[in-house]
Length: 106
Image (cartoon, rainbow, N blue to C red):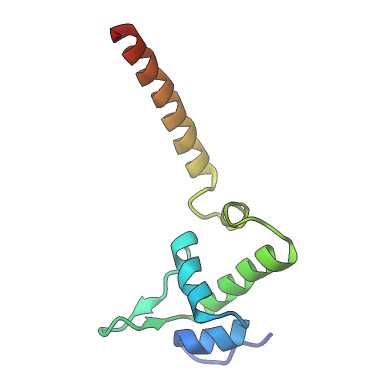
């Protein structure tokens, strides 16, 4: 699919290009930190061609490859990538340690 040769696109234009409703694009912004449209002074979203390409990749992963949202996020290197796994492991270990301390105090 060809993306028109423009610097910025409004959410309605992106919606038409990628064939997804605007509310899906807004939701994906919350789930995929790499989607970061610029905002005008009035708060309107302005997407770049790079943003649209990323949205098309996410749509492919979710709709065609049947990835889950966390799986797609990890695949494109979002917040659940390697760093996210290390952080989760650290938090799990910390919880176990705190539970052990609490049990000792009881």
